[in-house]
Image (cartoon, rainbow, N blue to C red; front, side):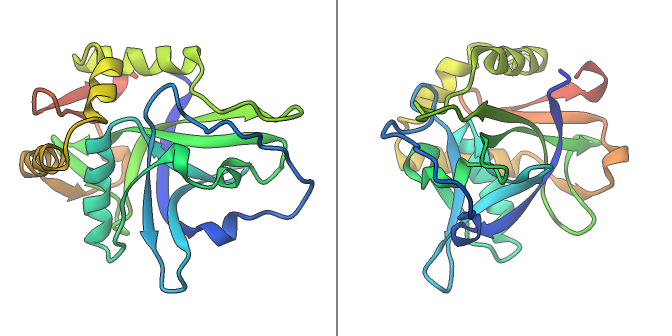
Length: 226
């Protein structure tokens, strides 16, 4: 799974993502309509919407999640640091946020799981969250006709989930998007209560954790298998 790597997240206001440069025709088709994709967002003091992003070699990339419960787990840890994130739907935010700094491609980071040490979720020494993630890119050629997860990307994510013992995850995540609020919040609370956190360096991590909200169980994949 050479496309997956460690990434750290930070808070970034949407106004800081409006890049100067050539105008891009982003079309009228919403992004991420084939697979539910979620983001973290928080209203800032100046009224702007702060979007959770990740630093990449080509500027900030919107941090995205395929599991609504995974999104809310990360939001919980951010609230503990004073950032009142909530879950948002990626297809509804400003599409300009997905344009890379080079203005030649769309970019997003798909956060898939958490590094763990001794079966405890790792928070880095500065308290920031870390994730095993894959950065997806799509070249901009003419009018943009959408931004979706390509099948090779989904197949790579398939492999991670299968190694964790989670099967039919695409169907499960799609179904989760239709859960009522009470069920989503209850599942998130059970996930958080079932695992502890620890401060550690990345070199100390030995597994990646994913949460199966349908069966309310944490699953772990050895880093050596990724």
